[in-house]
Length: 112
Image (cartoon, rainbow, N blue to C red; front, side, top):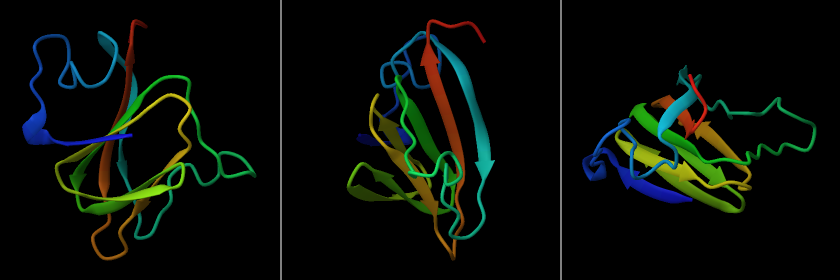
């Protein structure tokens, strides 16, 4: 897991997260409007794990959250960015008082 802020982005070319998120093209993602206390990927499987073989980036566009990567919990606020590495079990927990709006994406060589 790597934590950044929007101010630290310096895209040279390609996409906004160039130099942070491996890959020359964004190929999957979305904008998630979360409910107070909502846990991402909670229904993915009975074991409660959510793991990718590529990197996933989360950016808090509004509100607050906590990202849980393996056994580490990291608080997030508007403008924070988390890069989850391949193989890391991860969930985003939306704040109960200031629910998060999260931009999430994957990048690689795949076409959109």
